[in-house]
Image 1 (cartoon, rainbow, N blue to C red):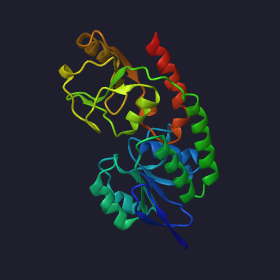
Image 2: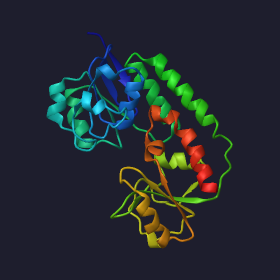
Image 3: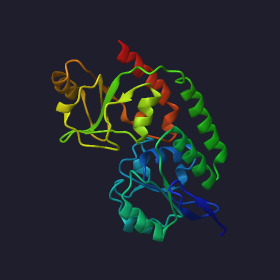
Length: 261
C-alpha cells in the first residue's frame, strides 16, 4: 500500500499509509475530533479519559490513560496510525510506540495551533473537506469574541488540589484567558504548584478537570479570598483543542456575563 510522509507539530517526519483504516487516539479532545470528522468506525483504541462522544468507550478498546498507555495492547490492535500530543502523553510511551506504529503528534499552545492540527489530521485521514468546515465554524464563532477589551482582571486558574496546581503562561488555557481579556495571575510557565498565601487574584477559576472541583470548593476558597470571585468553569472548553472549540465561544460569552453580575 502506498505511503506518504507527513510533518507533525513536533516537526517530526511520519510515514503513514495513504488510506488509514485503524486509528488509536491517545488524547480525548482529538478522539472527539476524529468522530466529528466521520472516522468513528476507524477508531480501534482510545483512552479511558475519552468521554466524548458519550457511549464511545463502550464501543472501542480502551488502551489505558493518557500518561500510561498499555503499549502491548496498542500493538495487538495493529493500528496504521497513532495520534497523540506532546503535553498530554508520556514521552517514553511515544518513543516506544513510534518504533512500532506511525505516530503523529500535536503540540498546541494557541487557537492557530489547534486549527492547524485539525487541518493536518483531516489531510492524513482523507477528511480534509470536513476538517475545513470545522475550522471555518470555529473561526466564525471565535470572531464573535474579537474586540473584547482587556478587563484588567487577574485570574488564578486552578487544575488540582492537594497540592494546588495552577495554569501558567505558555499553555493553551493561558491563550484562552487572554482571548477573554484576562491576565493570568501566574507568571511561572506551564503548571506550577502554588502557594495561595502569596496571591491576591481578582478571579479564581476552578476547573472541572483534571481535578473535579465542585461547589463545596468554592466556599472553601471564598473564605480564604473574600475579595476574589470564585467560579467553577468547564475545563473542557478551556483546554480541549479539537472540535469542542466550536462551542467554546458561546460558553465563554455566558461565563463573562456570569462574572459581570
